[in-house]
Image (cartoon, rainbow, N blue to C red; front, side, top):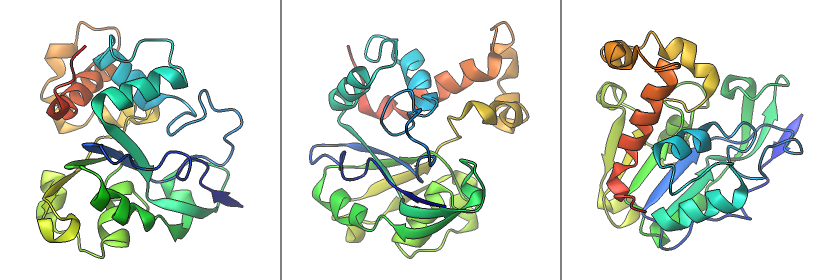
Length: 217
C-alpha cells in the first residue's frame, strides 16, 4: 500500500516563517481526519498547543483556527516523506518504507526565515529528525546530538544558523511510556494533583518549546 502526501504542495513552507514543525508523513486514510491538515487525524499537537496558548488557538480545533495560529506565530509545517509504502495498516513510522523523500524542503528552508526546526519524532527508524538530518542533509547523528536532542546547523547549509530539535512525541499514545521518562519523573510531584498529570506536563513542555516565538495575544 502506497501513501502519497496530501498536504506538502497545498501548504508549502511560507517565506516569512521563523519556525518549522517537521514530521514524517500522515496516515494513509485522510478522509476521516478531524481536520484536513498535518496532524489532523487526532489533532494531538493542536490540542497541546491549544491548551498551551488557549487565546491564540481556541477550541474547537478547526482548520481556520489552526491556520490563524500558524500565521500569527510565523510557523510552517512540513514532512520528510513525499511517498511511502506501508508494511501494515498502521500510522507507525516503523511500519513504513520511505519511497520518495521531500527534497524540495531544503530550498524551501533556504528561501524562508526559519531559524528553528522542531521535529515531532526523534532518532528511531523513519523518525523525523533522523530522516531530515541523515536522509535529507546527508549528515550523521552523533551521540552528543542524541544526548542533547538538538543540533545547531552551520550557516553553510541554509545561509544562516538553524537549530534543529527533537521534540517528545505529541501523540497521546506516547503518554504511558512518557510517564516513565526521566524528564517527567523528575517533575512528577509538580503535576500529581492534575487529573491527567502526563498530559499537563506535555502542555507545559510544548509551551516552553514554542517560547522562542514570544507568542502574544
